[in-house]
Amino acid sequence: MKIKKAIKKIVALGAGATMVGATLLGAMATDLSNYPAPFVQDGSINNAMRTTIKKQYTTLSREYQRMKNKSENPREDDDEYALWIQN
Image (cartoon, rainbow, N blue to C red):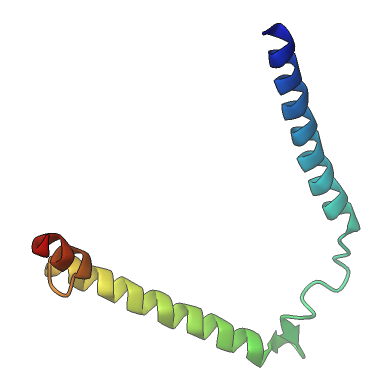
């Protein structure tokens, strides 16, 4: 039993050390000398990034409105509720 616990501890420590090592090596390999380059061109945000941000904002706004409407009108257009009622 003691051997089994010792093996588990060794495996856990090895996995933890692997994760820390991977994090540190990844951080050391990163070169931040030209960091905003993919996101900023000629002093302003590039169009691809602007489009992505706009899509994410629109999606989040729609989701917020859907959740807000659902909290105001519970059980309306709720497929899970409809299935629960049928059973």
